[in-house]
Amino acid sequence: MSENCRHDCQFWDEELETMPREQIREIQLAKLKKQVKYNYDNSIFYRRKFDAAGLEPGDIKTWDDFKKIPFMDKNEHRATQDESLERFGHPYGMLACAPREKIVRLSATSGTTGTPTLYMLTKNDIKVLNNLHARKYWRIGLRPGDTVIVAFALSMFAGGVPSVDALWDYGMCVAPVGAEARTRRLLEFTALTKPTVLFCTPSMVEHLGEQCEKILGKPAATLGIKYLLCGGEPGAGMPEFKKRVEDMFGARMYDMLGSVQTLHAISCGGETYRGMHFLSEDFCILELLDPQTGQDLEFTDGVTGEYVFTYLDWEGTPFMRYRMGDIMQINTGACECGWPEMRLKLIGRTDDMLIVKGINIYPSAIKNILEKFAPRVTGAFRIVLDRPGHQVTPPLQLKVEHAPGLESQQITELKKEIEQYMSETARVRPEITFIPPFTLERSEHKTRYIEIK
Ligand SMILES: [Zn+2]
Image (tube, rainbow, N blue to C red; front, top):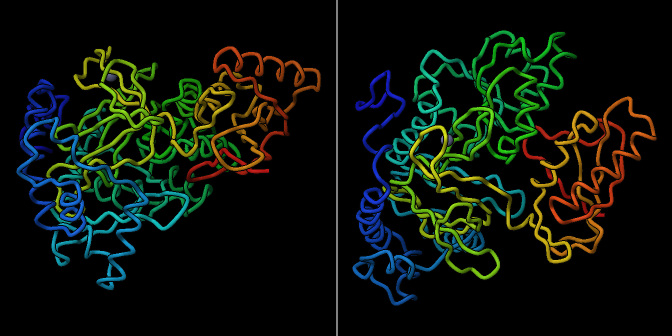
């Protein structure tokens, strides 16, 4: 527990978590100046980048100056890793700002294409990271004494070992069973250890819920789980999916963000999804860009764009103005729950954005629409494209699983209904092909919704 935290208080670090945003912005700016100097002094990559932009650390004094720092992205990250391997024979030489002997953890993002991009952490970074995790866990009411089954893949990726470490550090009782154990073992361990928390991707929660009766001979609602802590995919932020899975378990589903980085957020619970509260703004500068023009977007209520982050108080690989290619919506209006922070909602990846007759649509939006038709559909679907890329030649083709026991007449009606509904709500009319229930592969990690013909 944080030294500042009283047991009856809803904040882990009350002073920082309830600070007015203007004051947090001042803290950010002060930390930023230090971070810029640190990065410049300790990394070849940042020195070169600043020199090329004609900048010196002392030039960064205001928020306008901050915008002069060049962006970086995964391609540059990979290229710098390669250059490091070539020049130094190890990946630390270019990007790492801390000396090699202080790097104690390597993490990576769970990207599905290309060489993984490494994140290097010092002991201090892990301390900062665990503290930010603790803010999320405390806020939703998890306390030491809660048992958690970790069903993310137990890897160096976000939900794996780094999260297990944070849960341990927080004082929870952790059963790191892992997605590798597969469905049967996960359910058996759940029955054996009586956890109050299930920690995994939304796809995995759904899968465990669906299989529970078959494997354990009783419904998921009898397991005693109260919290479904989800991340890695947008599912927990989709109202229909959330409700269906919550009903399956008789539990509350929370959507969370934050892994090996300093951008941490968690949803506030309740029946209505209101986005994830951004709990780590004193450690992370967030920016939003128009994904097409790259123009800076102001934080207004409901604004949507590609997010860019900058780490503060970080030693290993303190990234600056990093574009991950994820689209986020920000809500700045007060939340009914009373928590003070703005809320974030992940919409999808710029890579997954589809453009049908000039309309942008993401797989998560399609999933959300299909969920409205449950239980007549199982929720599983694929988007079938003729070729890779964002541009889709209409109509947008979808393969959708119908529920067991539907007559062909009912399927025909359902097809009409969904096509009509999607055309009205998302302004894209799909062409749906129905397939029998449970014929699409269920992913225990991240579902890939797009199939190329
Ligand atoms: Zn809220």
